[in-house]
Amino acid sequence: MEWIFLTLAIIFEVAATTFMKMSNGFTKLLPSVGTFSGYILCFTFLSIALKKIDLGVAYAIWGAAGITIMSIIGVLVFKESINALKIFSVLFIILGVIGLNLSGVSH
Image (cartoon, rainbow, N blue to C red):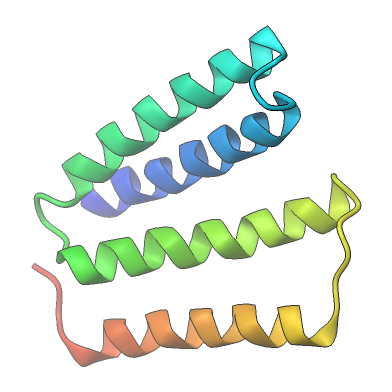
């Protein structure tokens, strides 16, 4: 069940960050509300997941998933640039998370 909570935390973090970009510096009401609501839900679910998942593992997965998904959204939705170094860097983040998961078993 804790992995479902971590997945929900990732989903709401991605939604909140996307809304933040859309809020234009918090000058648009609905995306601003989406940002704050998303982060409240994100951190609520993350805190529940942390009851059973090791902090380093959960935070690494949460962060790496968020970075990876937001990088994809940035390119596809917001037409941000992409190059080999960005792709390579995100892959290193993912490899680091895999390494953390292999280094020890979570409760």
